[in-house]
Length: 161
Image (cartoon, rainbow, N blue to C red; front, side, top):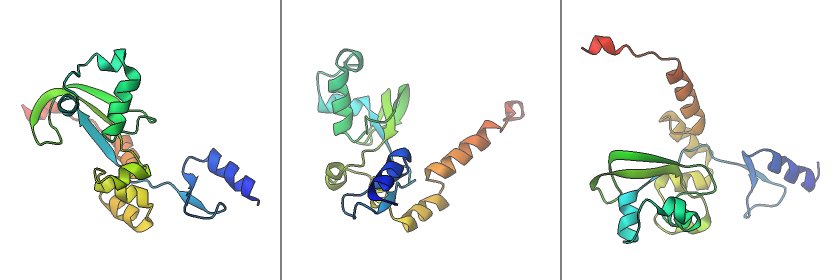
């Protein structure tokens, strides 16, 4: 097997990737640790006083840059959850929209001091840490199993009355 064969394999499989700190022939498996980030509109408003909900449709590249700077990986899909009571990062209880997605995994974000512990652990690609997160059901594979189980669960709310 040649280096180009390994690179082709890495390109075909999203779970394998080359690490810049290893030799080109060594493949690294992507970590399955879930590193989710939630960004509240209230946080965006504090950072950018003239922010309003129209930024998302009127200035999409600027809006995505804002989310990226706050730790959301905008290259992956993320969702907007509207009209929710939640606590923002400043521990304030707010009623507004929020954005939920994967946390950034680049060197700049991890070294910035703002990255979550989950993001730092995911970035390390440590198998032991991944197993520890799996015992807490905080890996992608266990989340998928739990979601598929919930899909077949039926809750009878009549017994609550």
